[in-house]
Length: 138
Image 1 (tube, rainbow, N blue to C red):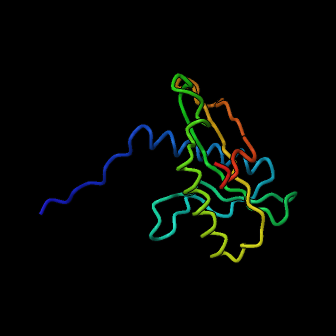
Image 2: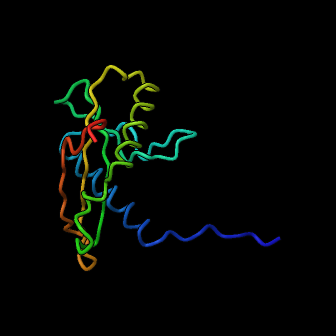
C-alpha cells in the first residue's frame, strides 16, 4: 500500500501562519501574555487565533482574530471579519472562558490586520483594532 504524503500547505495557509506569528510577536512586545493559540474546542468548527491578556487589564480576556493580506486590492484585511465569524468567535470564547473558569471576566474582541509586501516581508503594516466588535450587537 502506497503511503500518502501530507498535503503541502497552500500560499494562503503559509501567509496566515506568518501573520499569526507577526501578530503574536507584536502583542508580546506590547505587554500581552498568550493564553492560547489556534483554540478550537471539540465539536466546534470555529477557531480563535489567539487568546491573550494584558497586565494592565486585569480580569479581561482579549480574543484576537488575525487577518493577513499581501495587498489591500481586495479590501482591508480587517473588513473580512463578518457577522458569522464574529458570532463563532463569541461562542468559542464563551466555551474557552467556561473551561478555564474565567466566565466572570470581561471579554474584548480585537482584530489585528497585517499587510505584507511580498518583496519585503520584514516590514509588515500592522493595525491593531481593539474592541473591534461587540457580539450580540449585529
